Image 1 (cartoon, rainbow, N blue to C red):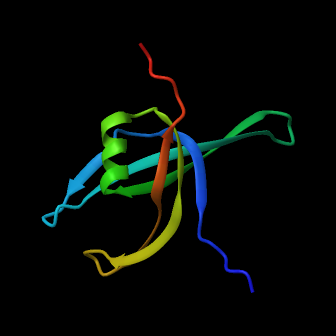
Image 2: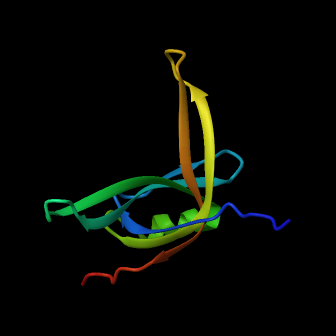
Length: 113
């Protein structure tokens, strides 16, 4: 049987500037939010935009690259894997988190002068 890979690729724009968190062991994690949009016409013939938001994290070198070169509005291609986790909030409610753990990120938009 062929093994299946957990792989995702997104093309979208950053919704905010990257946020970096540094850890005492020397590692760092950068978090970004990436918006992807689809455009289609509804039954009435009206143009509809469907925007989805994706939480993306990147560790160490990839994260430093994102922090250094990307800002809100940058168009990017993100490649990585989906990660699912859960935690209990302060009210005892279980919360679920799905995020993309990026291993490759590429800037697609041209730098404005």
